Length: 73
Image 1 (cartoon, rainbow, N blue to C red):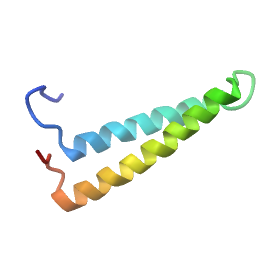
Image 2 (tube, rainbow, N blue to C red; image 1 turned 180 degrees about the vertical axis):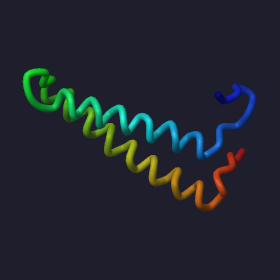
Image 3 (cartoon, helix red, strand yellow; image 1 turned 135 degrees about the vertical axis):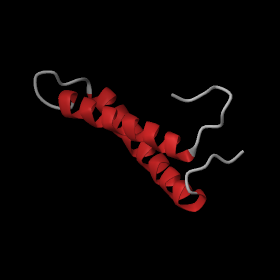
Image 4 (tube, helix red, strand yellow; image 1 turned 90 degrees about the vertical axis):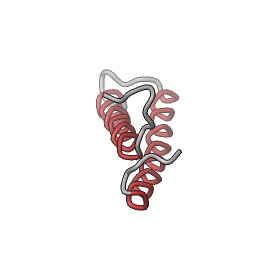
């Protein structure tokens, strides 16, 4: 658990974004096709969110490599 008073490290940010990516991927696997298919605009929104989160994860991966994962104030 993270503290409200402590800075959030890049490693924690990366881990959180990866969790969000997994959640979007799971949603798409369940609702993009078949009987439970959601409306196309919802599917496209989730795919867009997944692409954006992927680029954020890449940015945090780079930041972890550069800083060793520490938070930067």
